[in-house]
Length: 216
Image (cartoon, rainbow, N blue to C red; front, side, top):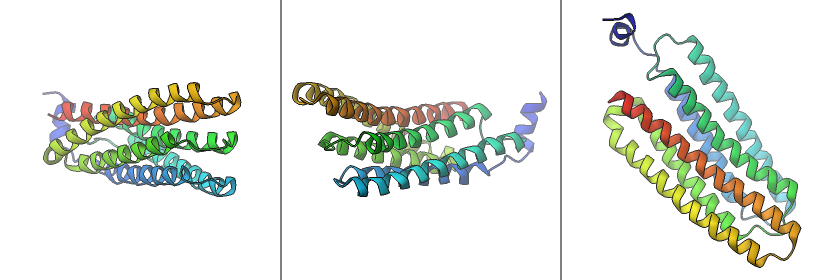
């Protein structure tokens, strides 16, 4: 029996990561709620205020991610593999980063209108955030919550497929209907970043499924 195997059974694991993951989930939900709100606003001034709030969430998320990395360096025995903890924190942070990326493009490009599909994709991002929240909260007792976590991962895949379909239909529509080249470019950039955010959410589920497989 090697030392690592022995330690896994007789040395307490560091559970300090789970509150940090829960905090990450809270920030993700808040930023996705703000994104949904942003898509309903017509006034540039109102948009600017919400964009600032999303940026604050992004900075807050960065701080939590740094805390997780710092805790990894301090912890002797982690609840699951270090590389998976690192990847999970990084992927959740990527979702918040892309949400911020959407809002910053809206602020910088100042599109004349926010087309309806933006709201649809923002809602999918919010739903994905709720699934991630459920999964992250469930990891504290992954054995008991395994089926619920796996179902959330399946739901995330379904949401990603729905977003992918919406993206391609909307992209075709933009090129077909938008006569103003500048507006076309603006809408295309925002659309692509929204779709990327859903892709990043699915990346979170991939790491979670890896963690569950290793814990089986």
